[in-house]
Amino acid sequence: MPIRSVADLGAAIREQRTKLGMDQASLAKASGTSRKWLVGAERGKARAEIGLILRTLKALGITVELKVPTSAEAKKAAPQASAINRVLNSLKKRP
Image 1 (cartoon, rainbow, N blue to C red):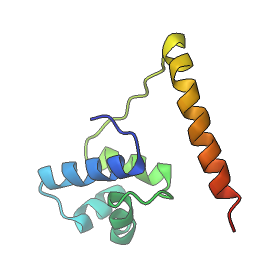
Image 2 (cartoon, helix red, strand yellow; image 1 turned 135 degrees about the vertical axis):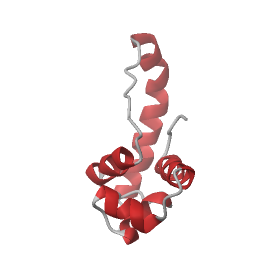
Image 3 (cartoon, rainbow, N blue to C red; image 1 turned 60 degrees about the vertical axis):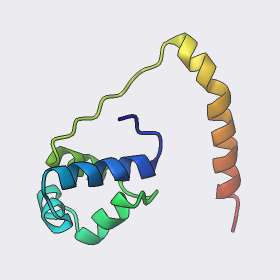
């Protein structure tokens, strides 16, 4: 499953947890997080800490693979990345 947003990641965590028959409390315990934190992660909370996300994925038996784009793929993606960075920078400037 391609993960393109924090919402996608949260959905993947929730999907795997339910496939394994786990409730949020048992997954939180297995991953060393709180249930409250897990609820936020499953909802795609953008500020979820990467270390806790990785521990949660490990508790679910999910591995993460990084795909390094070829130079041609990177050039093609560059305009999209620039647009995304402009939006993020404008959001940072808001009070």
